[in-house]
Image (cartoon, rainbow, N blue to C red; front, side, top):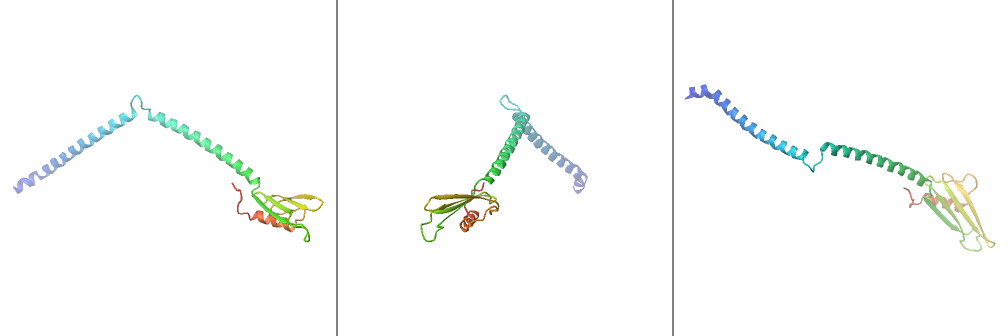
Length: 167
């Protein structure tokens, strides 16, 4: 009997491996057939669209959206630059220029942009009327005229204003 297994062992192992391979082939062919049926159902049909057509349409939509995004970004940059020049910081100081009479009827208003440029408007209230003065401000300073202490204080308040309207 030992002689029988020694003689036929290589053939039996080969037949066993052959049967395993046949079974694996049958299983794989059935899976391939199922995949082919699914792909045919996916790519065909009267109501179904061709996948290539869908991809081309999506590529066109992506290009259109990229163009729209670029236009929006360009518009945002323009608005951002315009907003940088607008009044974003305000400081107000009321004061009495005459120590012995009247109240705090005079005031200074500093209106600055993002770069601390703008103007300051000051009023001086007297018995005879009200006088209004304005001075241009660049980098938080007035280079043309000297500033009153109240005007300097209004600029400082505007510069340190926590509620800025920055975009």
